[in-house]
Each structure stands twice: as C-alpha cells, then as structure tokens.
Image: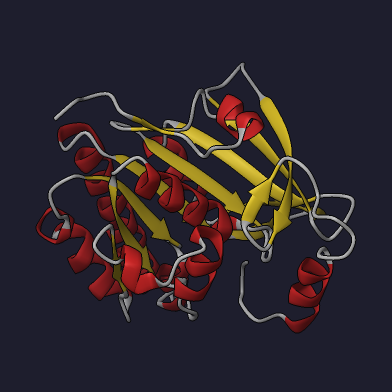
Length: 249
C-alpha cells in the first residue's frame, strides 16, 4: 500500500486551497454555517475517491441520509458504488464514540478516506450542565484524538465536518463548535460561507497559518463547480435552498 496518498476533489481551485486535496496522515477540519455545502464538499471527495479506486468510511450523524445527494454527485445508484462507500449512522454521542473506536474494523481493504459529517452534532445534543458538559468535552477530545491517530498510523485522510456557533459580542461572526479541540488536532482548517448568490460558496483556508488561500465555488446538482450552472438548470440551487430539504446541502 502506497503511503502519502492525496485524494483530489477534481476542482483545481479547491485542490489549490488544500495543497492538492485531502492528504493521508492528517485531519482536515471544515466548518461552516447551515446550508454552506459541507455535506456536498464531503461527498465530492467521496466521489473522487471512488474514481481513483479508494474506499471511504462515511460517519453520518446528520438527521438526513447522504445517499440521495451522493447519487446525484456520482451520477450512479448507490448499489453501484456501495462496495466503495460504507456509511455508518450513530444515533447518540456515545454510539458515535464507539463507531470511531472501531473504524479500523469497519474499513474494508483499500479504505484511505474517513469522513465524519458532522463531528459535533450529537455532542451538542448532550450538553446540559457543567458536569455533563465537562464529560462531553473530554469525550469529544478523545474521539478527535483517536481520529488523528487513525490518520497517522493508518495513513488515512480524515475529513471532519463541523457546525458553527455565534461569537459573543459580534452577531455577524461565527466560529466552529468546540474550536479549541479542533484547533489542537486539525492540520488543515477550512471555513465555508455563502457568497453573493445562493449558489456561490467561498472556501477559505486558515491553517496552516500564514498561508491563507481562498476559492470561490458554485453549488450545483452534481456537486461543486468552479463555474455556476447555466440559467436553465441553476433553478435547482434556488429551489433546494427554499425547500430546506436538508440541514446542509
């Protein structure tokens, strides 16, 4: 097995932001507001991994299934690619921890990509009081540290998608949930936000520090693109945003 693999997105501007794509041995942390396209970004890399013969484990804690969106992006029925993608669905924060602990058991031969969408949704659901919060904080740190170990020792690319919360005193700003934990473990940090149109998304790399890079992408039926959809098909993005079918397309 070749070490030091890079899984590209297939979009030049996005790959330039990430020094070529998702790298094995490191954690890439992507955060953004609702409907910024985090899930689509994750599935974009799943599609690219399939194309180069790399298997993926996809841990989905979101309330909606990623299968329909994955079928749109790959232009294939899930049954045609299910040998390449294993989707795991934790129902609680404790179950998420157990799944992460056993990821090596779930990974088929040739698995080099792990996507967690999203790492903090179930964590936020158990936050109640000071004692509970402390225990949940420790457990999230443990899970993230385990993912970092899996990336390094298993030579896997780990993509962690994350929610955001408002910044106290600045209603227009947001930061990733559990920022201190993710900042400690992540090698690459990328922020996503909605641009000047419903389809436009701005991708900004904030880590490695001192080398900020930005890409402007467009959300389409087939995933992200460096150019917007033609006017006759671009209605998909607008309708999707209005319907609110998923928490994050």
